Image 1 (cartoon, rainbow, N blue to C red):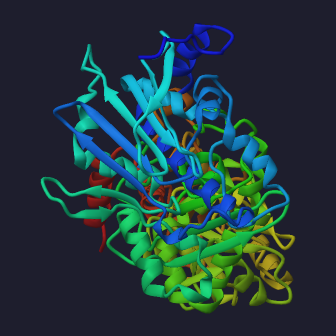
Image 2: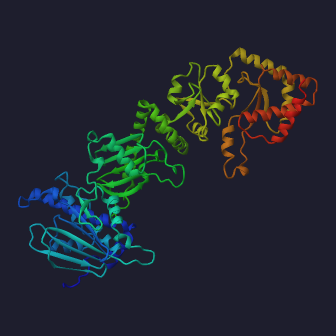
Image 3: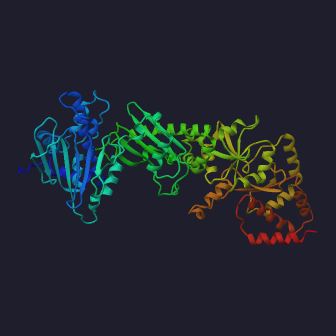
Length: 620
């Protein structure tokens, strides 16, 4: 046996650091060793192109993985280029010396279809995370001798001649015994090894082969050619959908497939899907956004969060780029600006595809929107309107026009010539919004109303402020200038005639309302409650549900409006003129009635019921 040698590194501490600190996920050791085997096959193929004495059939290049549970070993075998003695010493005996990096540099002006995965020369040492001994036997092409490398980690290594007939490399990992909470036995279960290969190395270009349990039959575990690397014209809709359902565990076909290939200073391929329905945990803290990240077909990260903004967190898919600057463990990026650059391209593409879906298949878009529309609106709200240009044309609202979803662009195209504002009203449902007293008059004037039924809707409109320079206006908040000069004069005259009764009602309700006045927004309804500018009723409802709402006590300032053309005003005037004691009860009932119409709670339901009953008993 050859003499044990120390590693040709600055210190043993460097290897200890690599084994215990650089890699945070022990599962990836198999990815690293398989990637090295793939590189060896690539090198042999490239050598055959430059050296006529080397004749190979590229279709025969492959990688074999086997598990011996009794011996506690995992073996990775390839029929790639192999290593001679000096290369074994240099590549395995010197930490961070990478033959793949040198080979990659030599290829910069060479063959396009050879992709070298490894760059750092430390991937091999990830094996020591799970192994107490690693043995490498290798024979290089056009060499007579084979050599063995063996190491138990920081204690050093030895290299010697070995017996091996065929060209290539065999790496055998002697798996550690379990200790403390570390379960190393899982790496000796063939189903788990298969799973790791599928997860991390499914798109290695050479077949990764493994025997079935207790059988001699060998099966290929990896797909080899990624779907996203194929030409779009060669991929059927069924293939896209099958890949989505298998990869992202959905039972339904996606609403939209986005397949893009970008070449330039930062090249990448992306295959993204927009689901039809939201996952059950989508609106919970448990849901993790992000796209899968690959580099040259090798799995790097499951949830690359920086690739999609929160507003598009529903997008599933992956990105594969050969140009990523990975750190030496290939677990995270050294420069997040690369991900940001990719994310910007993805964002523009996702928007354009959603716009295309909106314009070409409205029914499909509305199905998507019912699942994920709130996420788009959250994106507008959370960015304080900064994402307005990106998202505003993607949001939909129900409308009084045909009682269906509309875009803001569609609303604006239907605006009357004299209309300066986009009208909306908030309610619990479309039906309630359509029946609210303030809606009747606006519709009668021929104006379209947006019906906001989600808690976030009004907050969104407050953030974005306007659309195509048309400000948003709540029809039950502040002044609503819908009257012509004749109508305004009539309201003014009626208010003057009813000044005393209005003052009496205001005095009675002084702890509840800011004012009592005649309304220009009511048509057939006798009464309504509106808020002043600032906090609206809908905002009050939402904010009252917050944990600290009792301390904040945020309330909309209320104004009770009476219909000047309704018989109720005549009755109120008569009660006031007759100095009837009933007027106070009527004022309370009218206020509570207006609160109920707006979906606001009343302070004393029992008192309301008693006063209403007493009033009914006095009807002649």
